[in-house]
Length: 251
Ligand code: TMP
Image 1 (tube, rainbow, N blue to C red):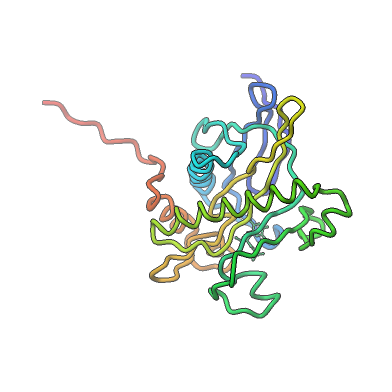
Image 2 (image 1 turned 90 degrees about the vertical axis):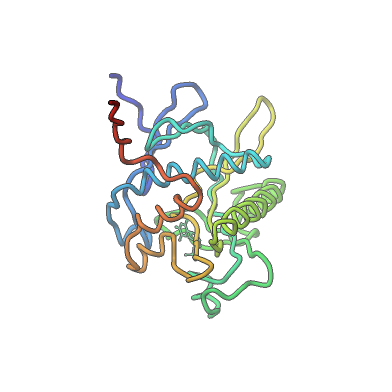
């Protein structure tokens, strides 16, 4: 079999050249990292769960008219996506205080915010993805004002969609991170939700118990990460068929 061309290997995914021009294959690894890869582990099955969950969220978004890079899932660990130019920002939307916001502003985790707060971090591992303002984004030319208007509106639509989907299965969407890409259709550029949406990039708390069902389980050593992600997948009805079905005996 011909060897595929690897385009990029990140902490949780590998990107390969896709079968047609303008496409990319995203391979979801089992690697988990936190604190800019200072903490690392391999968590069997995480890649399979994130591939499924990201497919579920991206398909749902396109069904409500939010453009994404997702084309189709190829197998347990891979999905075909449109190749795009990633805007070098992590776009974070927060509904309740947690994580770095709680630390930075001294707000207790779980406190409801007066409105969704959108933050931008400059994607640069060497710098630890620092928080930046729209002033930096405009001055350094990472995105235009038009791009930023579109990024904000996409981020808030994703927030409303994900909050509703999660609420329906008893989960509170505390915050999440997305990445936005530019795709070109002839002379036109448009923005799409890219990368992945999974419990690696969201904070998800059980509404009843407050149990963490996201990567904080790994960051904070709160138990089994696969149990937490499987619980999210199970509630959303997207649990992968892991065990082969038992053969039926025919008399
Ligand atoms: P933070 O509170 O650590 O800034 O994280 C905010 C959200 O962004 C949270 O849902 C986790 C997600 N996130 C990522 O997806 N990647 C990252 O590298 C970091 C630091 C956070």
